[in-house]
Image (cartoon, rainbow, N blue to C red; front, top):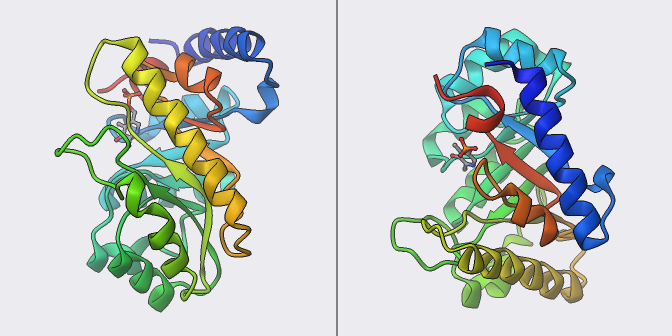
Length: 224
Ligand SMILES: *Cc1c(COP(=O)(O)O)cnc(C)c1O
């Protein structure tokens, strides 16, 4: 397991996917998802040039944050319990899992500055997945506007559990359309320029479909 070698491989694939879709590699940010690995392995990622670290649980987030502090840009990517917001809110740079009004309300209550949030959208409609349904998205975003510390920087989704690349691509391309629709609303609190999509198994497709943040765990840092 060599994180620097893994990173080269991923960057190479990103280059190919960008070329295939007429995008610039600089538009794609790699988040190293370190939820299953030690601080030492996360350190390898930072030394290899990774700027963005992602965690999905409070404990793991705080452990890594204590160690790296402002040497990384911090992404909370997992479903976030309302009662835990206060522990992380002034430490995270991005929350990828805004999926309910009560969470927006709690962010407003606890944050001391604007928080960059992705709205998690359940594009695939799988019951096991969190997220706002596409049909409720524009209503939800308008209502989020009442909380001035919540900035909607983009949309996030998880691909369906399938090997069918066509279905995965449809999911990502639908999220891009939804992002364009939100942008077209012209809401000052919802610039919605970013797309958080793509993981170890499908980031190549996500990049082709417009991802600006890909969330990579296993393929980059392993999972133990
Ligand atoms: C774990 C996780 C990832 C990374 O998954 P890999 O398949 O290991 O790359 C990405 N996004 C979320 C929300 C996750 O929980």
